Structure formats: C-alpha cells, structure tokens
Length: 242
Ligand code: GLP
Image (cartoon, rainbow, N blue to C red; front, side, top):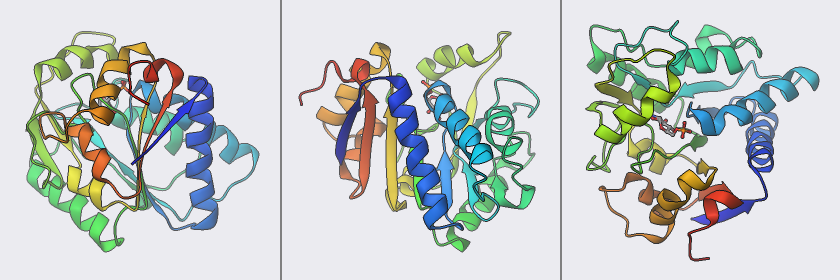
C-alpha cells in the first residue's frame, strides 16, 4: 500500500479524476467501480466536466456502483443510484448496458448479489476501485466484523453507519441494511484507492494505515493490497505516523 497526501480536497479530487480518465483513455473497455458519498463527489464532477469538455469517449467502459441502501428508491436524492445518475450517468450519457448498480428494491437481493458477481467475473474483474472510508472504518457497506472473504452481500448496518448515513437525506430515513460489493472484490481489483478528506477522517485514516489489519476495521485491508493506495488531503493526514 502506498500513501499519498495532497494539499487540498480539490487537489485530491483532481488527481483521482486524472487516474480515472487516464485509465479510460488507455483502456477504453476498463471496468471501474466507484463509491458514492461526500468524498468522491468532486472527483465525479471533474470526471464529468472534463469528459464533456475534452470529448472523452466513455462509451466502452463498464461502470460498477459500490453499494446501496436496501429498500431505497432510486429517485431518493440520498440514494447511491441518484448520486451516480446525476453526477456521471446523465452528464456522460452512459448507456444502461454499461452501468451496473444494485437494485435495492429487488424482492430477491441474493439474486442481485449473484448478478453483480457474475457481471464482474464475466468482465474479468475490476481494473480500478475508488472507495471512501466510513467513520467506523467501513468500505462500501463492509461493516466492522465482516468477513474479508465476501463478494457481494447484504448486511445489517452498524449503528455508526445508520447515524452518519442520515447526512445524505433531506428527511430522516430508516436505514437498516446495505447491499455492497465485498472486500474480495477490493482485493482482486487491479488497483484500489481509498480516498478521504477533512479532519473528521483523520482518526479513521490513522487506524486504516497504522493500525493492525483486522476485520474489526475493514479499511485496514488496504494495507495488504499489492496495488493499493490511500490518497488523502492534509487535513485527513494529521494523525498518521508518516
Ligand atoms: C457511506 C458509504 C460508503 C462511503 C462511506 C464514506 O456510508 N456506504 O460507500 O464511501 O460511507 O462516505 P463519505 O464519503 O460521505 O464520508
């Protein structure tokens, strides 16, 4: 794992967007998985802005959404679907055949998981995963205590995730479960990047980077990824031993 610290959230976002765009340029049929959330928001905006301005061909890559709140309608502005729809899918005019997001309203969530795993294995795996880190050290909805061996699965949400998750919604919502790619997807991806910004993430970044590798703190698994990066701004780097 390599650690890279950037001056600001904007610099971090620009660099992350560069990595995504350069991959699509060098490998047009790349498979890319992104997290939603506050951290990757600016990255997605830059990818879309540059994609349109520089007329980058995004028509051949495969987009995978990392996770979704179980039971959340797509048109809820706090859903992961809505995030990707407004920030990437619409602006870049991605076709439905190249976009793979969990349907969190499906009556058969196990099938949703199987469908996602099949899509990823048929595409010969994920080239790049860009994920955030939760205030409890989760990646996607891989909550503390999750097995490192999981592929896609449905999971009961941790108390921290339920509380912190309210920030995405205008009105209070009941959050109970999540559907998510597993940490095996992260470990099997050709390149994995954990991004974080702000002082509020300093303690969790310290634990992910300097703490023991443990399923009790899922993001710590990034230490064992051969092509794993932790990319953060200076505020998120204040507590780590460099
Ligand atoms: C959320 C999501 C994750 C996200 C993480 C951090 O609950 N399940 O996919 O990466 O927590 O979110 P944020 O970037 O808003 O801090």
